Amino acid sequence: MPIQSDPPITEDFLTVGNSVYGVTKNLGELFVKQSVPFIILRYAHLYGKDKKRHGLIGGFLSRIERGLEPELYGGKQSNDFCYIKDVAQANYLAIISSWDCWNQVYNIGTGEELTAQSAGEIICKTVEYSGKINIKKPREADAQRFVYDISKARNMLGYKPKYSFRQGLKDMFK
Image (cartoon, rainbow, N blue to C red; front, top):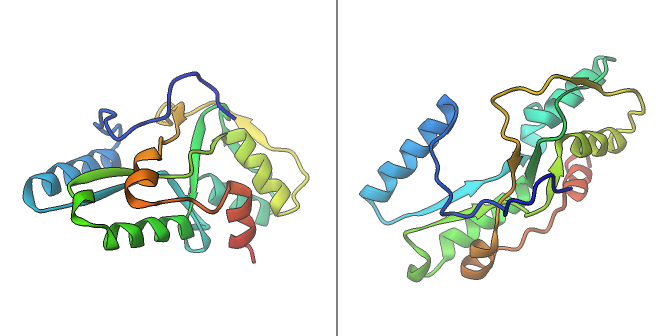
């Protein structure tokens, strides 16, 4: 559910990083762009079986499994959640792409924007948790809106995400 009227983030969006992690990713991109032929894939918020213990999903699952209410910081901020099988598809398409797709940056996500609160509710429904969600004060480091425009990856690489957030969670818990 969109929370702002700003357009989704394109590949031309100014990247600077607001954390050590973000800054090191940005520095890595700058180095690669100056060193070798490249294709850079910028991933949205990744999730999948092997990332089950990280981020919003991991936080909710960990607390629910321990009999605690899941905690949500804010809830109005939004994200683009990308299932790991869609990421694998994007990587494969990048590897087999023709030379005219090289030396480009591509956003890899779904284009599906969910608020953290909506995502948390979907997680709870998926794992059949019907208790309360403890909503806390928003964290300053969290972006208010993070959703990618994936049209360049669609058009140039043929990338087409197959998993909505709900579908990815269902597959993850099979």
